[in-house]
Amino acid sequence: MKNKKSKKELRVEKREQAMIEGILEGSPEGIGVVVIRLDCGCRKMAAVSSDGDPASKIIMYRDQAQSICDKCQDDNGSYMRVTESFIHWVDPVPSAEKQKEINTKVLGSSTSH
Image (cartoon, rainbow, N blue to C red):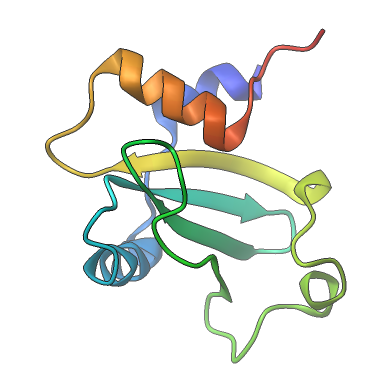
């Protein structure tokens, strides 16, 4: 159920916006930024290209902190601890079909087999 909600309702938080703008500024080929929120409060972000390939290095940070938490330092923000993930698109936003294609390539499919 959370996955269905996330496709429509997840939005960038104000404190994430400045980081996204900085990532995009250094990544001219970026058409969006992947935002991954972890259960510890740390975040992972990276720009994504129109092919769904990385357009920047992965930035990992924690709000109001000098560095990421000890858990993330140990496991590099394991995907097992992801609570939310989505792509924040830049205008002009790609077509719905292209968004779906890139989402699947970058974040994987939300269906279980």
